[in-house]
Length: 474
Ligand SMILES: *Cc1c(COP(=O)(O)O)cnc(C)c1O
Image 1 (tube, rainbow, N blue to C red):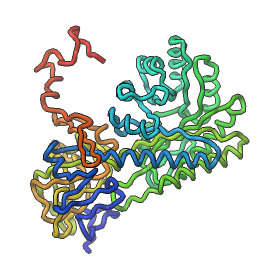
Image 2 (cartoon, helix red, strand yellow):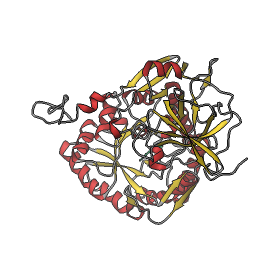
Image 3 (cartoon, rainbow, N blue to C red):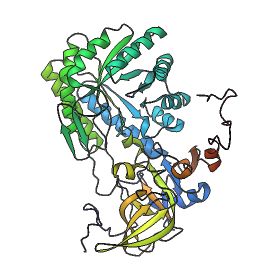
């Protein structure tokens, strides 16, 4: 086989470019007799016909079963060390009213990190007491709103915020439960973690101030200190980084626990998923057990009881449940070292999936409407935006006869695609359709160009959604 720098080292030409690698597609995804990919009991060809492309498709049963499995894994792990656990769905991965209802009905709490996300969760009927409110720069209005509706925990991110939340709670005549976000110095990425004394990033307070600031929180009668919080990164494949971070946090936790009980320890989210056939995250049952055992060990060493645990998975619940469907517009072979790369341009791009441009993320693409016996060709799936970095799938293989009009599906786009979607080049954001047992329904409406024009004050001096005084109805 020709070796070429045009192909990333991890990528190998598949024996069958029609095959759907099990770990990257929603559970049960398969091809029907016509070769069309079926998800949630519906052929993607039918969905494209009904809803158009680009289209986000979310498999409801798959998302729910991942939520259930992750909750069960953490419950079993917590029970094995004699404690309990709360699992928060990290809404920033993908938040809509339906998703809030799915995860809530599966027993998860929900994390939000802005007034907008809070509004979605509340509108969906989430129990405010089961919401966590994050953010390194919550506005006063957001803090007051969170306190007023009775959010279960506000995660304090700075010294300044301790005072702000204390004052807001005092003025509202409430006692607000809070966690203190600590920067453990552990930063994990997919295959390794880095442990330093300090981490140069915006979130949390440094570990050596955790005890002092915990005491400060306790000095406010309007605050109820639940414990420390830490989130070490994303797309993490094993438990080592969490264990290291937990051990570091436990020293501060234990010191605080010697003064008064510290009921909880929240270790955040970041559990990785497979985006390509070579990604192989450790099963969540093993990760959760590894973390729980590390926490229990550290508690024994410090002579403190094992606190209630909390985790905040986002991507690992909704990521693999989603796919994005596109129609191919053009195919352009470009000579590269050792052969050809086929630029397959689709009708979406960095406006519906910014992760490739933003993080250099890898994805998997397959023909969604048919199979082909043609040999695999190296492809790069590009979008339609005026920007050469507008790439959806950097490198994968499709059958050599991929052609204009073909439907293609990109796997594992459920997390951080819709939530990062934008209107670059005035491209409307696509709808989100949930599929389950052969039934499809829109859970987020798509935008039309008219929706975009409606905001242009040179076309519509009054925003259609604004009140007569010109202020927006926030
Ligand atoms: C982003 C984030 C999460 C979720 O991360 P995933 O990688 O989606 O699991 C959880 N907690 C905090 C504080 C976050 O910022």
